[in-house]
Image (cartoon, rainbow, N blue to C red; front, side, top):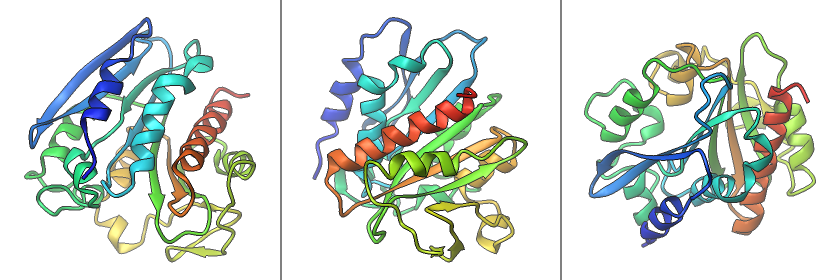
Length: 245
């Protein structure tokens, strides 16, 4: 079992100026945090999510690393909302699902999943310039990402170009049943599983909470520090595109 106290202590230790720490809810006794960096409402909002799947700890580690050291160069251009671990019970028990044995990532239409309930409350009335959802893949030989984008230049190719300097890319032409090019997937939203609307990333995009949503997938076979670095490089590359750099 993992110790969620590490997540709690690292989150509560954040002392940067203009940082706000909220507990969105307590689920199975664990606090689910949202950390806001820079509260200036005139700046574009970026939402970073980690820990949807408890057996993918690199997402939580990547989100915490961004909060601790990775955000400094961007604080004059964006405000950030960061949920380091959406699924604390899964994180502690190293399970993909939550305590109900539910895959949160595909449960948005349900009203009996506490993690989904807090997420719905969090996103209500918000519009994000971009969302990055941090995951990992136990079967992939390299990094890849999904990008949903509307009315903006894609960021995916720039991201994978930068991440390739940190870890291998998954260069297969088909990944998880989707067409891929150099580690970038632009998902087919008409696939039945997505069209039915239960996927959290799909809902955030289709319901216009954001016009850019990237799901970042690091290869679990690599060391944790490499996976975390890949997520941080991906975030930097996305933010550079988002800021026109």
